[in-house]
Image 1 (cartoon, rainbow, N blue to C red):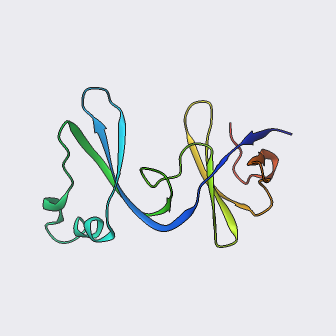
Image 2: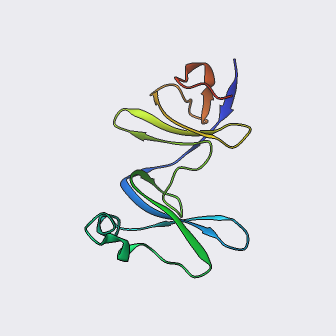
Length: 124
């Protein structure tokens, strides 16, 4: 049985973010935004509302994310939160691919230990 420790985060609602990459270091930066800012980009001539940040290239904006109690409001690697009677889990494998999935309550113990045999999507 393969197990891994996860960090619990508190679900705060639906989130919206802009994703940028630093032009010199290629580091990703996730910046929370409002639902209104996110939706403006989808309107006619919405490109004029695309976010800009000095020293960064805007990559994408995401809406309808699971907003949690982290600086960028997103679930990080090996973190989870409880939403609607189930856990939302964000796992990363050895090559950095993220596997975001829902798992049943009780699949993670009080210490944050997850039994990977109970996952729908296997981590490779």
